[in-house]
Amino acid sequence: MRLHNLKPRPGAKHRRKRLGQGESSGHGKTSGRGGKGQTARSGSSIRIGFEGGQMPLIRRMPKRGFNNPRGTRYIPVNLSALNQFEDGARVDEAALRSTGLANGRADGIKILGEGELTRKLTVRVHAFSASARAKIEGLGGVCELVTPSKPQAAQG
Image (cartoon, rainbow, N blue to C red; front, side, top):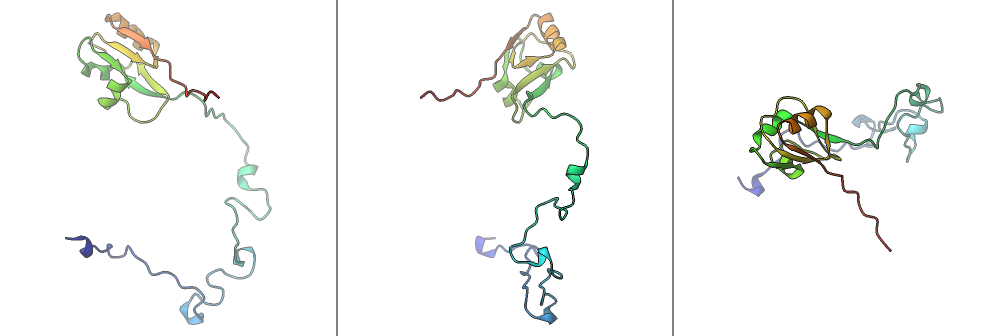
């Protein structure tokens, strides 16, 4: 197989709908736009949710709840997952990401107390739950907090 042999799969390509090509084409006269009115005009576009001047549904519904878009988002990592590191190892964000325990974008990593830890570790992350901190320090390990780095403002 070469590049010049490649073809799209059957059914992947469609003919362009040719509008205004006479009545017998099925797309003549109004060209699929129906009768008169706002949507029949050229250049017409009505924003999503517009109901012809009636109060739109999204504005008629009561607003409830709370949204905190600036909350801190942590990637959770359970204590039992840290058992794959060697005894006495230093566990930080780079180590957790390289082993696949922390994936994706977030403001930091938080160690949760789910499961049992069997190794003495030095854990250096952005947050700990109280039970995780107690279990790590109970085995003689160390919990170090990292402050997330904020972007520096340009000095002028």
